Image 1 (tube, rainbow, N blue to C red):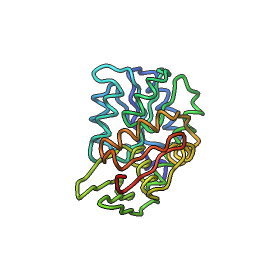
Image 2 (cartoon, helix red, strand yellow):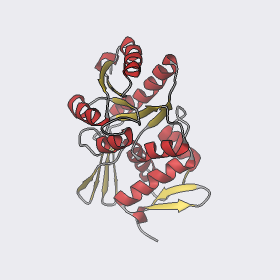
Image 3 (spheres, rainbow, N blue to C red):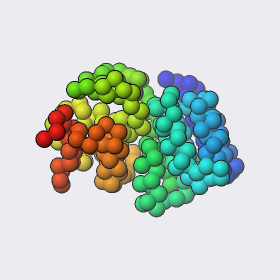
Image 4 (cartoon, one colour):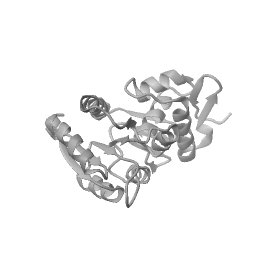
Length: 230
């Protein structure tokens, strides 16, 4: 995928941020669209189907957390990478961001070169998804990595990107215990620092959507996917 084929949506209520960040990313060859509040972000996300959304948290009309949640629950936007670009650096804000379905959390201010590097890293996930086209069937669940889709007993279940990747990893080897360190490396990679609570949040979401009995906690080690409740 060429750079000029990649669309990025910038969402911030500060015109200077939109101008500066947009300028640097346009210089890299990306196609840029902008919005200045959460409601417009949803409208433009639906219209342009961006590969990446850089989203502020504190905005008028609708904040970034709510906008992220709504985008994640919009059909056709399941493969969009979402990263918060915000001055809110508190732990609880980061947890809320990941809980809403974000893939990454970048704290402002950030130097343009570092931001461009982060964007390139995030967009590598888009390319990996284009390559990863296999399908996994476990019990009555089908995991289609090409369509980024989960079907359980014929029912379509929309999962945010990180929840999908985490579930796909665990379900790739039922009954295998995946250590927390392995999960962080395989799902989040080295480009983002997250804590164990982030994994817990995503596991909780998966339990709510797919069934509590499918995921077992191995205390002090990690998690595993099981087909049958013990």
